[in-house]
Image (tube, rainbow over all chains, first blue to last red):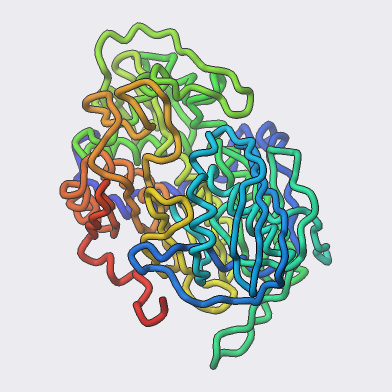
Length: 152
Length: 361
């Protein structure tokens, strides 16, 4: 068995998915559904389509999508790793400063030390998702997103 | 059912930074679950195309030690939407229950306690193992699902739900390899030839993403994302292919490239997330042949028709290094991008067709 085929991996992987899906949920279904998360579907929403990208390799976009009102706005981002609070200062319609005001993450604060500068340098780009983005940096970007939502 | 606007905070399992309207209130104290409530009408469609009637629904939950988010471009008030999204999340729970190395009661860990006998296993466990062993064979052991005990002993042994540290009592004098695992396709049984702990982390998350994606395939656009690995189906609410940023390996908020895809998985393996202090194992991407963390690669992104394949191949390519890694991806007929620690980029020969064209950047 182990050696009989030169694996055609694409076909194999698709076949595995379809056969598992076709067979449906397992005998553990009842137990699993008990621990499955209760879902809340949000109202019609637009996907947040921007990311602060500092244009590494010039790969990120240029489109600034909205104008911001001057002032300082607080935001908090939180996930299973902990939470991060930031203060975002808008001056002349632009992000002039981002400060981490609290960091209660499982990861040390130095992990996100560079991020405020990244945000200030950031250009907005039309991105739906990011591959490789991990939870430890999400809380920070969520905090900034929340702060900016008040400035919009 | 008329969907009700959610007043909970925006907390998006992808790097997002644009202002979204619908100011959030307090962050969720329930760390187990986040609900996305980015409220606001869909952005206007691109010039020249009619605005689409669809709305976008996003929801997220913490499963498999990461944040899973599901996004659907669907019709407002679709009565089936909630049930389908629930089933999609249900697959994650299912796969985790079956394949988790961190749960003594999982089917996987029960299998690991039955050395030397042919054990009949469920479809998901058999499928995940089948995939893992094929990639192990193709990569000549650079990818190997028998690294479980090495990972456990290196400190990757915490159950994120209970906080408990798992310790498998096992007399394993020699390091096992994928050759010690035998599958019988006809009987759907697994036989372990020696004591070992299986780790299906690099396959199971992808498998769950793919199964969730099947559940949502009836929608004109959807995305299933789990900890930076994702599958996107159809198109986004703008009627264009999904635009996926690829994270810069060293700068948390920066992108190193962008691609535009539909009906494909995009998975990235990188060394930046899960670390332990004990040298020489500094991150979770082990070279199974040496029992040490792999080096020579900062991140590998694979674009493939299934997340299960993309996830396994990105892990294997990470261990193999830039040159052999790209050769592996090309042999498997998938595309990918490898970033070295000095930020040199090495791409498979057809990778460029996925890249966002320069004029649109």
